[in-house]
Amino acid sequence: MVIDTHSHVQFPAYNDDRDGLIAKTLAENVWMINVGTKYQTSVQAVELAEKYESGVYAAIGLHPMHAGAEFLKQRHDENEESGLELETTFDKEKYLALAKSKKVVAIGEIGLDYYYKPKSATKLAEFKAKQKQVFMQQLDFAKELDLPIIIHCRMAHQDLLEILKSYILNHKSVRGVVHCFTGNLEEMRQYVALGFHIGLNGIMFKLNLDEVVKTVPMENMLLETDCPYLTPSMAESQRNEPLFMSYTIQKIAELKGVSVEEVVEATTQNARKLFNI
Image 1 (cartoon, helix red, strand yellow):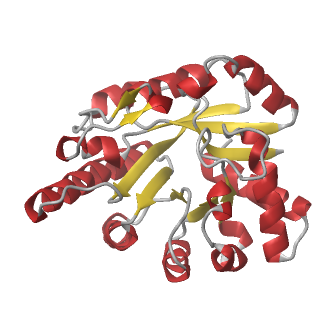
Image 2: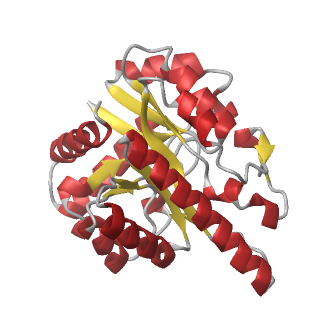
């Protein structure tokens, strides 16, 4: 078994063949966790997961780019059917109702994202403060539910690490994965020291993450696709799919000098333990 710990098969990119793609994926003994980016896509992830007895799960949460959308120009993402939405307040009660589903295995994707940002210093400070506020609210939410978190972090690792270190110091319990890791070797080591997993996907075919992959302990690795995004360059489709993890697995095995089977076994055990599936 292989587990795609970060997919978005609930997104419109799969509207024409979603059921068939999931059937094909499960037939190959590949499971998936579809991750919410806002309330709407979190609802869709839960509804999709509940259609299947096993193999399809959901995470719910508010992505930092939506949390800070009031400070940004609207950007359209056809994969989410709309641009950034002004869901700038984390509505705990709405997400709590979603979390009652037994198929919800994590809170995410949550975190910090400074890739797109306001130009003025004042707005930038407010933008970062809003993202941090919403992230902290969702950390508390995950702790209350005793669920792991799925972290989205782009161009903000030092701020995010500072928050996690302070949170762990004061609350002592938070676990999860840094999805689509793009940080440096030292940042990876700091996350691992805090007990976090590192999510590896097709971004490794676009960025040089070789030293990170070689160094990250096997017990801290998770596999993912972030589909429909980040399709490996050698895949036969522009749209990413859970089955395309095979390319990532092969490269990880080569970089770490282990077999494909060892990568699959370790990452599957890690995922099942972290997400309790």
